Image (cartoon, rainbow, N blue to C red; front, side, top):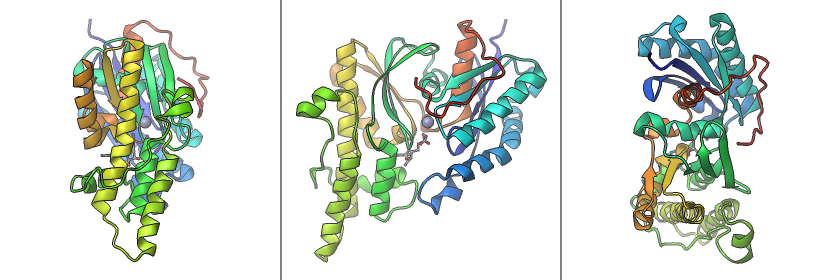
Length: 342
Ligand code: KG4
Ligand code: ZN
């Protein structure tokens, strides 16, 4: 028989995502984003995100079904992000998924957002090699995960102790006068810049800091260093070389990310590294990760950019895997957990 048709719902941040997956086959990936509504605030406003999810939910479900050429009644199982994320935003997705599960009389799987970022790679590159290591970097998270079993055993090795990597990109973009969300603009500006123009600090990479935080990240000191550097230039009445600062900042971030990810692969004896999250779209991160993985004999898997950012297909992908491995569905009083650990 065919693998079950799984509908996945993602609402942990500012994307309303609804995906349809059968096995490891992607059938639909509908996303409505409220990013433009947050742009003038320079960051995601939780209440604005929740209201936008409420408005976009049903139309996005309908669009996913239309794109896949299926009816809601064809859906065999539901999956939804139940954490971590913004509480009000999560509640909209969880409530919608419960309503569908109840109305259609189908099983519901509550899933962890970070595990879903890992599972999504199956839609691009087929069954996940386990164990693998995952580096998830976005506006909301920066985590290094050891993944023996994506459906029930995902272990956090390290994470940011202050700002997320994407947050640092967005804040530095603002300092450089680039639009929000700044990651793609910094990436583009950096292409014309000198990566060695300023030697910005690499957080938690030496001495006691490294010993105590082998797999953790810190980007707040870097962000401050960039801001101070730019302020000094302005005080001196000198023009700010935007491309060079962007390239130097970006190099500091991706150097630390890839260095720590490959150290973890080596320490843990894992030979597959997976990237995910919005920052995985960064061209320099992809290039340096490839270079360092090749040198270390580690296979690199990076989903296409559209699947790296938050979407419903990743939730459906993990739901499909939970169903395939016969895991127990969630009860219909499933809570949302904004600070859910992996
Ligand atoms: O995964 P995502 O869409 O949403 C969450 O934050 O969960 O990630 C968005 C983040 C933003 O901080 C954005 O600036 C960053 O990913 N980003 C990038 C690039 N594209 C998106 N950062 C660096 N380089 C990029 N090309
Ligand atoms: Zn995410």
